[in-house]
Length: 333
Image (cartoon, rainbow, N blue to C red; front, side, top):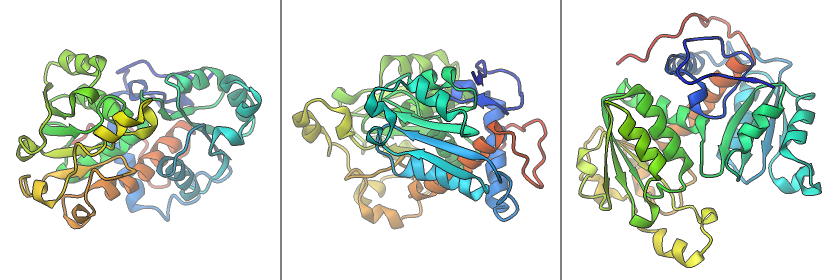
């Protein structure tokens, strides 16, 4: 099986590694990927054939637009190729095949796998079964590591740092895997104050709160009113209430419009605040906000592609022309 990295290990080559959660990647490696993505952004023509002959398999057992296309575009921009499926109905799972057997089969075709699955732990099962690197593209309400890399890159580009920030996370904090992954990763870097904004039905799970509490330099506050805290925030991470995570449609309809960010609320925020969103957006951000310079969510989309280019080139062992493959530098302000 592809090897996984122990948490907070010293820098080691990512070549051949699976990434199920960002705990599989040390903080120095994350900083390295951020630097690599910035290099790629400025040298797209130079890296356009770096992955020639390499194949990405996208195994998406639940619907996705942005994440799947981002992975596929990332490999294509590196000069590689893509195979895979975009729903369980298009795969042999519809015939009863296990994830393990699917991944073992695909390992003979591809050089790296990106997998999305509605069940938590599916990516870990895939990583144990595969003989090539597996990247988790989202499993259930659990983890979404490459979205977090996109989020970190966006914070870095906006503030020049990913520490010493007050970050508000608003909306569905129970089922939002992007929220859980971002909080846990920022806690590893430290010095972040989290403002958790949600109705009581969609509060942050205890295991995520425990992760914040375990950090010596991070703290959190739980509130239900966005307007009362928006002026304190450096970044506001909005999330949609996810209909597909609800068993009761009445509960979904009651909660879906709890928080809507519009220009009236944005007027209360700092002029430098960044608004992030993992997308897709439904009603939780007014389209009027799109033209405000604080809107960073479409910037996140590009950063996601760049970070996936950086990650896949690393786990497949691709050398990027002109990029110094040295010990990673810590993120600097």
